[in-house]
Image (tube, rainbow, N blue to C red):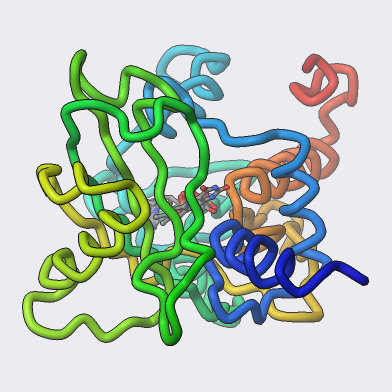
Amino acid sequence: RGLPPRTVDGLLRPLLGALLSDPALGTSSRVADLVLRSYARGRLCLPAAGLAAVPAQLAEGLPAGTLRLGVRVTSVAADGVQTAAHGRVAARAVVLATDAQSAALLLPGLRVPDFHPVTTYFHAADRSPLDEPVLLLDADRPQGRPALSHSLVLSDLHPSYAPPGRALVATTVLGRRRFDQGGPAGYEPVLRRRLVHLYGSAAAHWEFLTVRHVPDAVPAMPPPHNFRRPVRLLAGLYVCGDHRDTSTVQGALVSGRRAAQAVLRDLRVPATATAAEAA
Ligand SMILES: Cc1cc2nc3c(=O)[nH]c(=O)nc-3n(C[C@H](O)[C@H](O)[C@H](O)COP(=O)(O)OP(=O)(O)OC[C@H]3O[C@@H](n4cnc5c(N)ncnc54)[C@H](O)[C@@H]3O)c2cc1C
């Protein structure tokens, strides 16, 4: 699109790799356009109480007793679900809102996408190295495979992420990396050297808290990506989640709304009574 190579290699490639969790950039360019647009319009955000605040806020609008948590479903049908420890639950409609792999286990035949792994390292510092909530891209990379994708001082985004007088730094490593001895934690000293390069010498003294490796973190979206996979399998049986739209929280929410609208149509609930209308 006529951008200078320095902008493409020094900003766009690492930014898109970070936003898509896809360092090889095999993602559909339409998805790339969408995430760049969302990033430019929305910036970074994180609920003060953690991401669990989003489902908690959705649940607040439901009548008391509607939700049952910690119940594992072992099979689904249009008229109810079988659970591991709570018997059968009958229903007029069933919406399967799991991750892609669990959905395909419960409904064989559903497509299982490839996934991008995400590994996140958490460090505690005595003070924020930046004092502003910015996404630090490892864009000025030495030759070869970059040690990390991006890093962020979470407590600069919201102070609740660290106790007073401390700062929490989250650093992400992407790609199917073979962690040698010691697994992801064994890789921390290599990562640390790059953090010192990016943040300065104080990073050498940060406390390494923990690392989370999620091999199937983000469903891959190679071209041509279908932004709106069907959510209605048959009357009474629906499927939603990030694997039906885009592999983001927003995609999961949009697919959930599409499934809810399909349920309401099938159950012939008047449109004026729908939550979407009320919102
Ligand atoms: C490390 C990491 C970082 C990410 N960063 C971002 C980001 O910055 N921005 C962004 O937009 N997205 C990000 N994502 C992606 C985002 O988290 C997902 O796209 C989103 O959570 C998908 O929501 P979902 O409701 O489709 O599925 P999930 O959040 O996976 O929820 C599915 C639920 O189904 C439950 N379940 C599964 N099987 C059963 C069963 N048999 N019975 C009962 N319950 C079952 C699971 O316990 C789970 O609670 C990230 C993901 C990871 C892993």
